[in-house]
Amino acid sequence: MNQNKEIILLAVIGISPAVITETLWALAEENPPIYPKYIDIVTTAIGKKVIEKELLEPRGKCLWEEFRNWLIKEKNIPKDSHILREIKVIVSPFLDQGKCLELEDIRNIKDNEETADYILEEVRKITENPDTQLIASVAGGRKTMGILLYSAVSMLGRKGDRITHVLVNEPYDDPRLQPKFYFPQQKEQILKTITGNIVYAKDAKIELADIPFVKFRELFPKEFGRLPGRFTDLVWQYSKEIKELYPQVGFDSQTGEMIVNEKKIKLKGKELLFFAFLWDRLEKNLPPLGCHKEVDKPFKVFAVEWKKKNQQLSHLFPEHSNFDEDDSKKCLSNLRKKLNDRGLNKFVDLIFPLRSGVGLSNSIKMKDNS
Image (cartoon, rainbow, N blue to C red; front, side, top):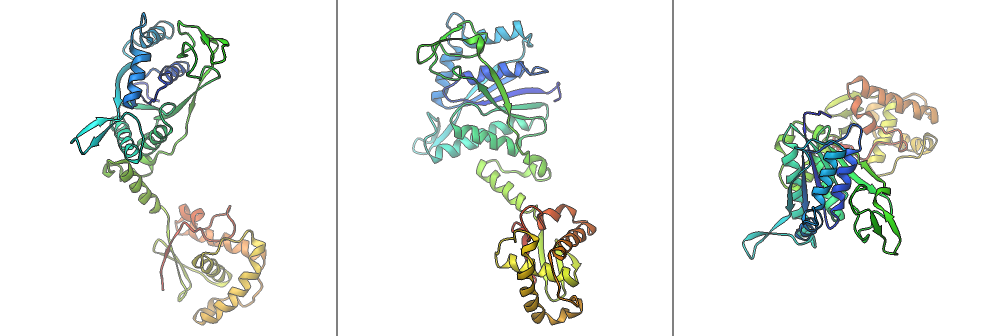
């Protein structure tokens, strides 16, 4: 991580504000410790009220001030860090009123779509700035909010950005504790469980789990500047780009050529018959054969019929008809090698997968050469 980058914690929160303090506490415990410059919270109107009541309203000193002062004193955090910048409430257009209003909760498909777009835009604001590092917390809020934040960071996240989930042991993860748990060193140490048992805040264990994610932005750097703004449109765009990663494969039965992305590869002998056999099964939507031992019988039946229909290729056919398990393995190996020799090595496993039986992958795009 570049220490000169401005770290921003973006958290989705529902009615459990403790996720914020727990996450920041865990970040401060890392080696080296992580000190976000700003904390941005995405929530609903109900969530904002709860956050303000629990973290920001004075009770002697407000909980947020207590927590931050502890970090400054005990963890020596920079005084210009851990700034609660904004509690952002998701808004949605209400057409009958002609204006956007804050969402009280996420109750239907429309609310969910507006939430997706809102979260995506917040992630975009951060990731478009090259001088920032994003830490996205998916631990709070409704499950859909965490999933949407995860998806948004997967689509827009960069090298160094993180997605985290905070884990707290029982019973400290129970929001029914009285008083509530926020971090181990809080002033209110004596906590009572729902069953009346007494526990101490200092005994809580907090862990921060990093959630791996695919950085689609790195897969399509040329397309990134043209990506759409709406969540569903961005998902569609990436889906389209992913499909185009797969090779276009064809088979010309008139010339005995395998064609991969317009490159023609001449086949002959058993390799020609073997590829024709695999191609025929793919065209008929037949599943891959379980192993090379299972190839023998269906291959021989196919070869007899195919030779009759394609006499123009008789000069390329093998003179003998023996075909066993070793032949199947050798043909597959040779076909893979031919792709490598033609500079198509990145498509070898996509066309001839080794771990899913004997057959052509059904993920390839079939080119019609009829």
